[in-house]
Amino acid sequence: MDWYLIVSSSHHPAWNLALEECILDSYTTLPHEAAVLLFYVNDRCIVIGKHQNPWLEVCWDCIEQSELPLFRRISGGGAVYHDRGNLNFSFIQPRTVFSKEENLSLIQRALRNLGIEVARTSRGDLFYRNWKVSGNALCYRRDRVLHHGTLLIDADLSTLQRSLAVSSFLRERFRSPAVPSVGSITANLKESFPFLSVSMVIEAVTEAVSSEGSTVIQVEDPGRIVQKEKFQSIFNRHGTWEWVFGATPSFWFETAQREPHYKGSCKVEAGRIVEVNGIDDKYVGRSFDPLFFSKSIPENYVTARREP
Image (cartoon, rainbow, N blue to C red):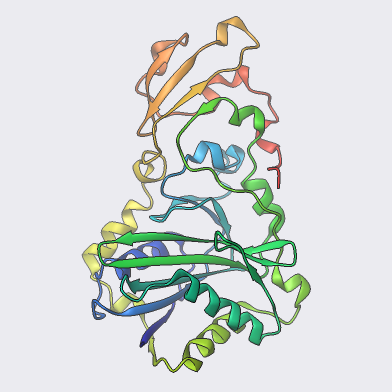
């Protein structure tokens, strides 16, 4: 099988997410049946899965203080932290040739060639010893599949832990069907393999593809292969409140029971409060914010660390 290899030079999360989606939906000059291997590295941000609730996944201080931009991707899976020390890999293939197991085996072989032996779980996560170093997610669109994942090489793990920390006190207030993240103890590969770099891993994966007899076709400028209007539309969507927050599955939020005045609950649809019980109806129609009910939430709830 021939592979088109793309290494994005952009570090803008929305740009790379839009590029991924354009390739998946064949809004490019590449053949429709093309198999694409895309690599990109984002600036600091948080990316949640398509079916997740951001208020249940992200430290709200990080969002309120604009410390980290938040994005929602088109695939499932859990919330992840990105920065320049995290490598994102994307396999975009026709369904007829797609194999999650083969893709992950390719990543494992590439790391093995660098002297790094990682184990794969039933969910497809990659572990070095007892530490998670990679997670992945899927998106199916008609006859094509996006299979992408992360690889922790030299990321800021303290920010990762803090940004994805939501206290159990707050979590207990939600009644939500959204897909929760599965917490794990993480580590950077560079901690055990100081020689490692992002570019080294990209090269190793590319060599692993070539060693299977596949032809690798380098795409030098991905910005020139996309359909401009489609790309711009997708790029713009990734920056909207309606996509990042409004696409959250409907949920109920219950205030704490410490004070009679704050007993109650609210229903949230498309990110906005549509119904209240025992709460001032002035909130109806407003975009949801758990801090509306701050008297029922301890001041330090946002600083809690997620249980591994």
